[in-house]
Image (cartoon, rainbow, N blue to C red; front, top):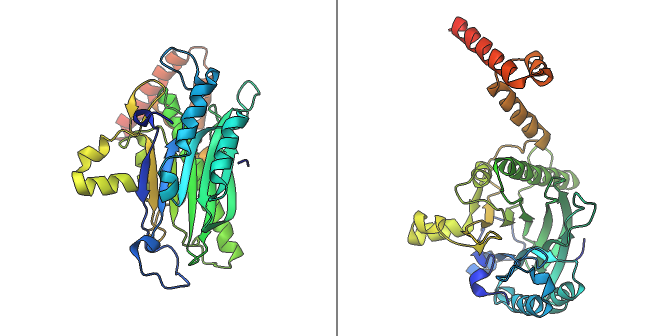
Length: 347
């Protein structure tokens, strides 16, 4: 672990007051609404190693531009109003940018960074994640989740406790793979399953260490934030909803201005130039029941079997014949015909 931008292109100045009133029993009376909650912000700061300028050049070749932009980022008002700030695409490969964040923030925040893993060419990625935690909170534990996939993406999980009242929660910061195609969507879903499995694993370890027994995880509220590279009605967002996550921004805006305005919000400009809504602060109620996370390997096998079944396979023997066939298309047509005959006879 290691630890301005043009306002129109500010990746995600999405801010939400996550007033989760049932976090954990406080050890001291709390009387003000602000003290009952906390503020989370998330921001994709656009790594200069990837960010293209209008002239077509990468921003990393223009020090006067990326230094000025990052100087504005560390001066944003959100640093004063937020308890937690989740950043994506922090440029760890640039000592000047890294030092800028540390110098500006270390007196007010605990800084927890995670640089992305090695890419397919064997080089460490230049960027990564950062979670800044106000010093009024203590960091009890940190878990790094390496997705080990084609995008070398990752997630970081922090277990924090507020010093004033002992309230605890889990924070997750992530940046999912950009959905270039249908295959990328499947990889995104696997990344989410890996996050959920890591959360369940950590909560189970907390339960064991605290002697809670009974098979139920410790009642720790969960906040997941970051650039998920998916629209509000996308598959990733739908999957997270099935696991009890609700978007704090969409909940608030929908109540005030209607669902259509919430769904149409722009959170940043993608590298393609498209204005998108893909940055989230998602909250999960610890008291609400939710299904156990699936192992990502089981998800992959289910995807494989779904494909094989669509090609007419009804058994492992059929799958073996299909994969070993000299002409897969001809074999698939034979299997589909056989499957149709069998279903007709059964009917």
